Image (cartoon, rainbow, N blue to C red):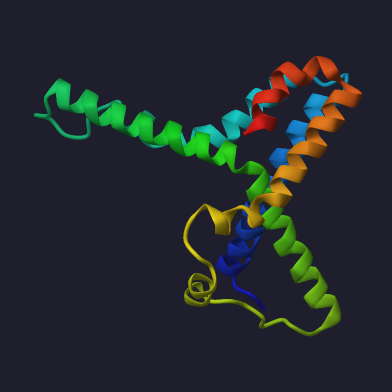
Length: 174
């Protein structure tokens, strides 16, 4: 049997693997389905992505120790807030890419499990760095699928609920 901590780790890995695809699916569903208030669901997904990144800034509002000047404390909180906002913005920007990576990993795992071979196929970070050239040229081929996801999302929103394009447009452009 697997110990309870091991089971918890497996469930947490499954949760993290499914979070980006579910967030992306929630956004597209909110923008295309008529009875769903698109703005509410968009704010919900933004909160799910943004709150964990902003928690350090929120916990830092109250000083942890006495004797810190108000100015340096405010600068520290502002720096934490800026870092949290930039992390949340990056996660939102790369949401389609992250969803694609997770769905690809799930599909590969399910295929390897069903085929019973290739279970130990993996590439080390050193091998990956040796085969990929630095710069934007090496990133462009890996970003084709997220761009296609955004294009399909834009086409769905335009076809099914064009009034949501104003809300969905900035996210789809990212």
